[in-house]
Length: 108
Image 1: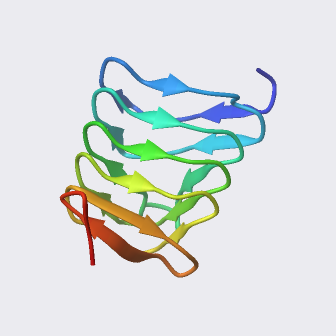
Image 2: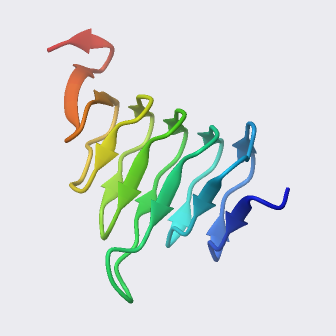
């Protein structure tokens, strides 16, 4: 797709990009079995700092993940969420700036 920009040197098996329209993926690495929706931006905050996406992460439409952050395994990033800080494993985050609404499936 012409509007899908993918510049990630290490991608685990099972990456699913649904509707890659207007999607930029420039991570240091993406783990296995990740899901990325349309209009997502994963990218640099400067010349060298870009995200690490661990295993089994779902990133919904319009989310932005910027800079040297780690998105922990089994996390869910809600639509239009803006992330500039690390997200622990097994969390659901929403908002701008991002805040955690669930940990291990339990509302916080």
